[in-house]
Length: 113
Image (cartoon, rainbow, N blue to C red; front, side, top):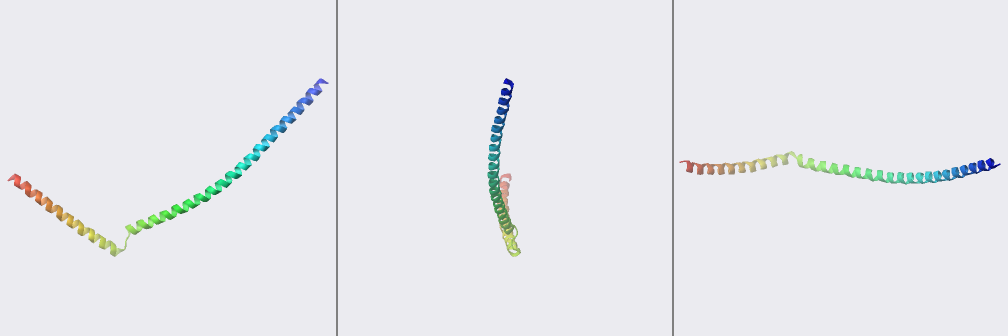
């Protein structure tokens, strides 16, 4: 008779432990699902923000490319006028440099005579 009581107590203890363990697992599973839903919502918002930022980056790149092309590829007349102006300025600088070099050579000749 004692063994029957021991076995009944063991079985009831096991059932109570299984119930408590199952309840804890159920609560943790519900918490996990809730957290996964929240993470999914946050991930959706993050994807929206990322797509918005990607669009803004593409627009900025297009604007920068257009600005570079406007500077690098001007109208042919404007480009020719700019090149002729730059050539004239370079010629003036070249003449100044040659005159300065001639003056230096003349002073050197004065030392060598």
